[in-house]
Amino acid sequence: MAYKADIEIAQENETKDIKEIAEKAGIDEKYLELYGNHKAKINYRLLEEIKNREDGKLILVTAITPTPAGEGKTTTTVGLADGLSKKGKKTFVALREPSLGPVFGVKGGAAGGGYAQVVPMEDINLHFTGDIHAVGAANNLLAAMIDNHVQQGNALGIDTRKITWRRCVDMNDRQLRNIVDGLGGKPHGVPREDGYDITVASEIMAVLCLSRDIDDLKARISRIVVGYTFDDKPVTAGQLKAQGAITALLKDALKPNLVQTLEHTPAFVHGGPFANIAHGCNSVMATKMALKLADYVVTEAGFGADLGAEKFLDIKCRMAGIKPSAVVIVATVRALKHHGGVPKTELEKEDLKALERGMPNLLQHVENVTKVYNLPAVVAINAFPNDTKAELEMVEEKCRELGVNVALSRVWAMGGAGASELADEVLRLCSNGNGFEEAYDLDMSIREKIESIAKRIYRASDVSFTDNAEKQMQQLEELGFGNVPVCMAKTQYSFSDDMKLLGAPKDFTLTVRSMKISAGAGFIVAITGDIMTMPGLPKVPAAENIDVDKEGKITGLF
Image (cartoon, rainbow, N blue to C red; front, side):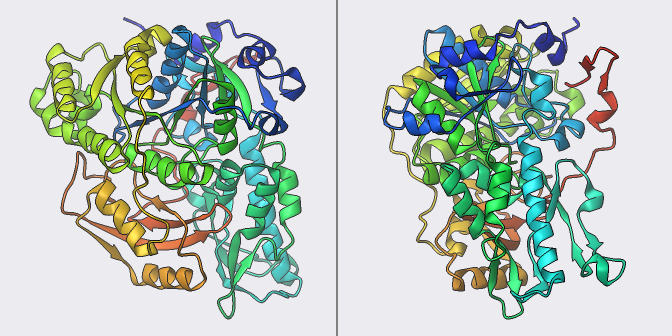
């Protein structure tokens, strides 16, 4: 049977005027800044006006450790929001913005799938409202001001060997990971080693996502540490007098983007960091605005629960003063069989032994959510036609042993109607209170925080710090940065720092290679294993399949 492509389903959908969606969400037209008929930014003044309203219930959607077989986390998030809407609940969905790098690299699109999508999906997957471009421009303005300061006499005494601020571009481009710039003689700058990160790994993106308002945004930017002096004193963006100009570049990007699902549930799509190399969450502004406008807000965290959910709960919730009422952990039978050692080409066949071998991956994520964070959870099985009754029963049985129910999700094929069972369980979980707590306390040392995440969430037996990481950790504590959360940069494909260790590996040592302070974002980034902050394109990039006709109609975008 031939299935329609996601883009075909989206293009055939009758998208409502965004003013109608705003009205449905209870947003006065005076707060709308229109980007055509189907997109709008919402002025942040709205949040100030409604700040005293009671918050709705927050539902976090996360997933098992990702595999090439796919999990469908965004699809489930969108479908669940539509499912709650179908039950008459005033619902908002809050998602991250796709990044051009993976859209043209490994993914082809990131706006959900099938009949559970946010639209206009082509716009969302490409330039959208320009937020990520603004982040890139802001990041590179700061980079330009650093090098210009050095060129113009270097009054602050910046050691060019200790500049930590890198340039960025919103594209997967391994060629730019490490470069030498400033060549060509004295008029062309001071030669130094430099490099690029992907824009969504930039601290500017984290700052944008975590800022409460424009004043908070400016204050965070001024605190950004860009490098160190010859005597190892930190140099900030504020010392370079860059905060005003950078905030000016970001003032519109700070405003949440309003769109809709295929079933016209209001959706904020705003902010876009990866959870493997950044903090991986939708913006605080969008989430808090949605909580004031709706009774139920469905949001997603990046990649697996060991990364996305951990950072959502330990960083975002702590900074924003929010907590989930329920957590959805998305899994597929196919992906669990892959964790059990079955190659991608063989996943269509029933294989209960492989499924049993792969189940510990799901169960560890469940235990982390329910026992480490003390949050109620439901497992959503994103259904595929080849899933057998015996396989589904095994998943249900193993989860029930941990006190967690399983709901079958058919949102890809059925939209909101396919999330009815899942929505019922989520509503049940939301009706009870919970004893949410973070995985570590802020007054722990940096080492203790990293060890807590590694041992409690990843189940590492030990943590090893390179000499470089040890030196950086000591320096950061001496500079007074010891009391902030830690953002772990780690492969998304394993609980460990080795992407080849599938399932739920035990007795491994996590290696921390380096760390740096993101003082504007308000956390330390600890880089583990071989993780890169600038991805490369795969052998056959998704870009090869994307095209546009003379009418401007895009094809191949997932």
